[in-house]
Length: 483
Ligand code: NDP
Image 1 (cartoon, rainbow, N blue to C red):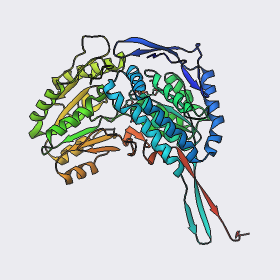
Image 2: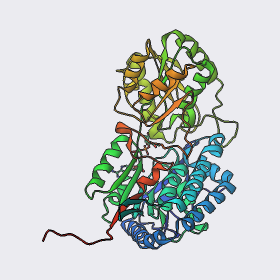
Image 3: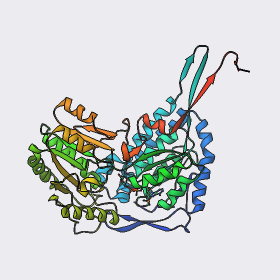
Image 4: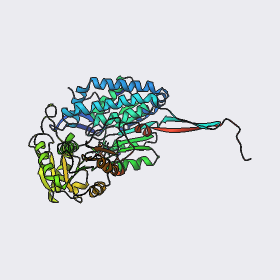
């Protein structure tokens, strides 16, 4: 397959190029080799994207929801038909193994388009009777939305933002991460093939230097970011100047609590899923694994045994289930954290090294005897590094789990049903799991509390973040003015 797209940007219904932009080489993480050459959006490309989106939005919002939804559902069908081709591309873009991308990337994007396509016809207001008068409410589009994506799930992030935005009658300009710019172009291409009018979904490339002026543009009504907390703070502040709506899907350092009555095999499975899927590059990962003292040794033994079964290798080979880091830069960040973990006295149980091969491969790494004040227990690493901490009592585990600025996810493994709900009820986190980890069906709200975010993606909740309510008071009788 060719990984070089026809052009760098998709604007006003077509691929467009401007070679005067800064070159953006795209690197395949499994080899370190360049697989495509793109150019950063110039001010002229940004202007085309913003003005075509602004021009197209009103007519789109005026259509019935059913009509809008039909386009999204058609796009979902096309994505499913082309799942393999899109998954191969996702693997080139991110380095994530095909054994993952075939099941969770394009498919979850299709789920979002199908789900919001189905909801679009049911977006209604309310009738509020007030004696002979009444109020009715209308759910209106926000207008022009800017989406900015992280590099770990480029297809999914593009779809999770496009689907609710378009279902509600908005237009979008989307800027993928410069590290993974290929997949969102395919999403734009497919949406237009499915019948989306030109201008409603534009993809333009670039770094934060392109993202920042998009956020600041006065024509933009809403900004949805998937990214880190520091970037979230900058974009939130930038958007606040014009009082723009925001959705912030940010990072985490989520706790996974494993009690001594848990099914150990299931708990180990949950900890593996919550730390090593996508080589650990998942925002909601449960990277602080709190294990109750009595089962620590058994947990670590089974964890090490099962990690030794990971098949690390060529991500395009479906037998591989653990791939490289997304980039040299991200690999070096993670290597630094591994070094800090050792320097601060954590016990390296397994992994810790870079593999002696091309590409950005790190071993799945587990630290034990981690304490709350160690750097690796406090900061988001965003790589395959699990920190195992121990605890004695339920109250202690809850207090320590919540002692962080983040609040994206939390999980608990226990056979005690009441404890499971009691513990999760006290977790300061937006997306929680009982005897599971990292499930993200489109029907469930997804997003963080505290510094991990504002707003929610997916589910009916997302509708509230891509629309606004107008209330209309209707008086039937006389207007009684005081003079
Ligand atoms: P970054 O925060 O570095 O970047 C996110 C996006 O913002 C990129 O497209 C980036 O461009 C862009 N950007 C950077 N600075 C600005 C700015 N000043 N104005 C506008 N745009 C800007 O995140 P990463 O790409 O490194 O992704 C990893 C992070 O994303 C982790 O913290 C992870 O937890 C989080 N994440 C959160 C998820 C969630 O749903 N809660 C899901 C997935 C990831 P560029 O990088 O191209 O320069």
